[in-house]
Length: 52
Image (cartoon, rainbow, N blue to C red; front, side, top):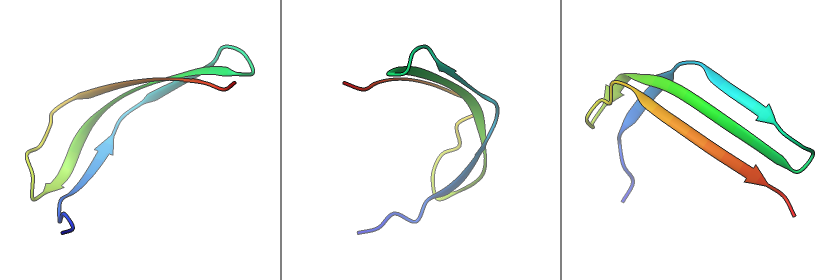
């Protein structure tokens, strides 16, 4: 069964490519226009990627 929730996240992000095979992302955003679920006021997201 498909979910009917919808959300729009707005905020800044940072991308840092340390080497050719390693990178990092950092995003901070707030949610607006939320439908059919609870709204989160601030979200921080960090990712690290490495290729082999």
